[in-house]
Image (tube, rainbow, N blue to C red; front, side, top):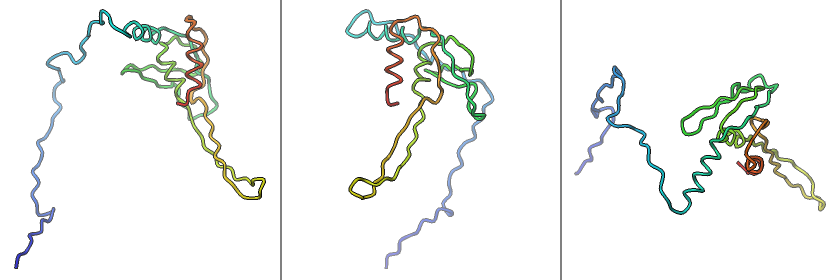
Length: 158
């Protein structure tokens, strides 16, 4: 008769991992961020650089105040590891890339409504609504491309 040996986990000795101590400051061997020279030519380079320049332009905005006592103040945003706080009710000059983040922050709600169809049968309708999580006003935007860009961003489904 052949018997199978059962392995029971409490009986198995698990090797203890070595301890880790944080007693010194981490210093990388080489730079973690390497600057790369801009390409000298090629398709699309100037268009991409123009878009980057556009997103780095400063605009003047104000995040509206709220009556919600639990609302964030300041409002936190971050882009590529750089943070930007927006203080409600105060006009601030910020880079356009942070405005894009604010414009993309939307709250979505779903409500189901039961109704009777003309033929007498019952049906359910799903009503979806969305709004900006942090309503804001653009005080000044010197670039003529700014207003159409913002309208398109606000009309997107994000």
